[in-house]
Length: 551
Image (tube, rainbow, N blue to C red; front, side):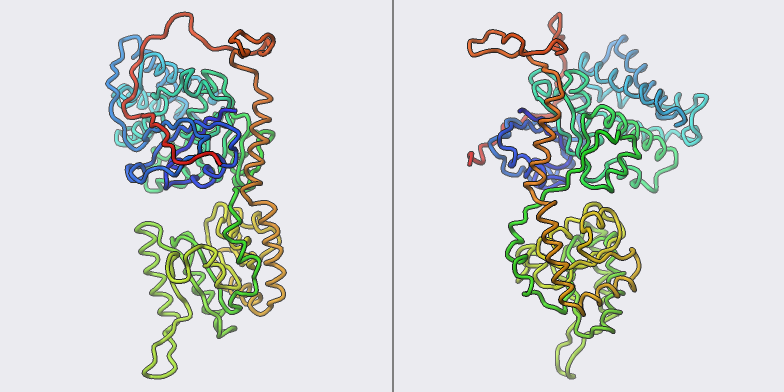
């Protein structure tokens, strides 16, 4: 089977979202072939390079969404008229009242397909999407009768901001990926995220009937709702409408949708996903690095709490430090190890604030006037002495704590479960679903409840052992790489089994094989040779380096 893997800001780049699980999926399904179509998120990511690719990756085609040169395509009068009609229809859908969802969804899909067909026949859309024609079409839609109130209040800067964002989001329409030797040659498109990453899959489905599978471990539409809080209401409203329509169309055309947890599944259902298409597939993680620690839980320090993760405000370390102040009054020997580096400039500032708070809450305790003080809270990073791997971090404490106020799927908790550690977590995201009944859960932003749960486990080693053993058994059953790869392998086979044969099958001599294609099969083609079109210079196909040999 030939899979077209669609990614945005992740695989095959070294850094990026979703890179690890994509790499494990590709390596685990070594009986299939993979063509990777990747959008990069920035120049730094491209400079960092790729991960080593296994031999089943046949080709890699990349395109930047963060910057693009003008394709130099100048439309004639007829093409400009077609663009104005399709873009005006798309703008009208974004500005329309959300009361009539079904007709607006059809209008959005028709406009999107019209723009894609125009780009395929005439060349790229970059220049047209940046033109004054696009801004004026958006302005007419905002001023039209029946437009939503936020759209009517849009001013020229708002229109320019929305038009620029839509141009970036629709940049995949200008690519030359949608040919019979490109995405038309794959058996299945697998989008590793929703939103823009799935757009090439939508077009492959439209032009060639290629089935689409969408995987979301974090719902991309939710991210769009939460970003740009300082933007004007008109900008937020129009962009939310655009991404909402794009997400709904992706869900409607997908053969299956695989959320990574029930939390993401609820979001997808609220955003229009058909419940019959949903298949929950938990992320696959490698349990081998944690096996040695998990098989010797008695080696942990019985008085130490461990927090592991990226330091940022969403992790709410302030509440954890206040909770630890209460823990120390009940258990004077308790210690807290905060292990992790800051996430960007905001995380660095937050880490400095947490260090200052820890110094204020826990003044250094010294045995005498000439002794060096010892603070019960330590801030450490992986890679330091005794912390070469994440397993070393969890091995140092008897209880692992998560204090987040916002969390997707808690990979840190899964690692702690592989290490057979009892956990105390806040009830956010997919935490309860991940740990089941193998850990304690408290409300977020509640230091007292967090402290009481930690104290109860510090005082009861037998309970810690039981919970840790149950946690490890649950993690090995549900969250391993083998479980993840096997689930996707079954879904791939189910999708292809439901899809009519699209290609002419030949026998060993090169003659058509009778009855290989059912009557309902569709063979795409052209009655005349297609007109040569401009190829975007900002999208490239890079030869796949021979970095590994088949094992």
